Image (spheres, rainbow, N blue to C red):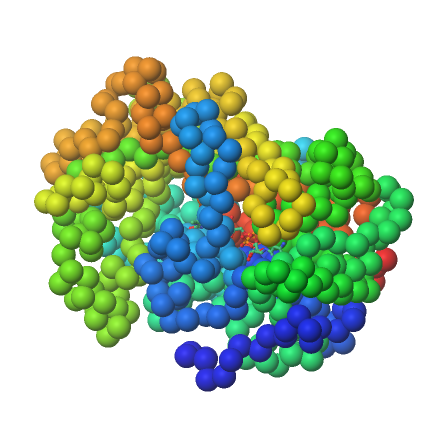
Length: 576
Ligand SMILES: Cc1cc2nc3c(=O)[nH]c(=O)nc-3n(C[C@H](O)[C@H](O)[C@H](O)COP(=O)(O)OP(=O)(O)OC[C@H]3O[C@@H](n4cnc5c(N)ncnc54)[C@H](O)[C@@H]3O)c2cc1C
């Protein structure tokens, strides 16, 4: 129902019950799924605790506005990383802050990831996490709203809508398709069908509903009518920060008894007003790749030496916060005609007003945020020294692409400053990094961002592969130009650039792609049932639990981790 006719049914901190069966910490991408599934049984009580707000305004659902997270949105939280050697400065990190979490501010791409990667996880010991085991969970949550989705690969009855971008909004996308095909990178007909070889170019589906609104996991899994219907057994409490878990027992038999919560925006005495809520069965952490390890460490589960430095009694020595991964990206920027670029919006106010009314009246146009509609996936091992795909080396069905190029019909920097031209960025991304960073406590305050060191390109193989990926990118740009597309270098290395020139470009244009993962990795921190090692009733089910960062965009895998976690909890019965 939209707009809301009555306020969203939330529960205040002072209204919480003394005890719940399940407490879900973090109402983000994964947390909304878990709260939905666990509260489906009316005899089960569930509490969902979220640091940010629950309001879901009209503007926050318009794709273009809601993806503009860096302009001080209350739904986004900004951190600064430690200085990164590769770019010589800290990088800005953003995460969602509010019900729906990062699915409220992200770019809405719905991509599941290559089946070969999940199968490799299973071979490495993650029993039950192979592609065949995960497919039913992808299908369960999905409502695929396109013409004829293959029923073996897609769901049509789930809660979470995704749809294809049928027509290309900017001509650079069609030009990129032609460039790919002439270079020997074929079409992937359906990026999310596990029977397709995941190498080539593909249209990227997005989580947007038929009204042209962002379909976050908040909208999908906890819509107002459902929250209202379940208000007796599902309590949703926004604007609170989980401080720590109160845990009893010995190192290999820990039991969480309660969760300590404080108001997020409180100050002075109010800010320290701690409420303790008891848990009968389990606590599930869904506070994201920075929040979940932070809460574990504040609760005494983490690297022993680090906890001692902060005066935190060590309950369990685990490598929490290690294994931080992200997809490192490098912008390659070109000038293109202004009319073929989102940069036009800021140059021509009249154009923006026309597009605004076009969206209001017809639900189409630039406010749908059609700046990325296709992406290119390749394996650097199958490129020659010049970056061109080797024609007689075909990837296998279980290939895991290690690079992605996203043509983005927008560019910052020089392209943004030129009033007469627009920008096109070819964002070149390393999908299977070997480099690992860390998340560590800055201090003992749960509201203070932890110290984040991404450690990008610390593995020599990562640098070699990002250079190879950039060579393919410049080759694609060269094809665009030879096809007659009006493109010239803004901030881009030339074709056949040396390693030194590429390294300088990487230092200038390296960036995060916001895919933070694996800080409570399966295998080292949680087991295959997502239970924290040594704990009886504590699981982690969000992007921090991935054994490694999936070679794709992360929201669909995060939802699948939540789906499988809920299924394991429901089938497993009572704990402890
Ligand atoms: C700008 C951006 C664009 C992206 N684009 C895409 C895309 O197009 N497609 C895609 O697949 N992926 C994309 N991603 C990545 C993807 O959205 C995230 O990896 C994924 O949504 C993370 O889900 P999560 O459940 O792990 O965490 P989140 O969704 O971040 O949820 C964590 C929640 O926990 C809350 N929380 C944290 N600490 C506490 C605490 N102590 N107490 C209470 N609550 C707490 C937070 O407020 C938040 O709501 C993007 C990410 C960003 C930042």
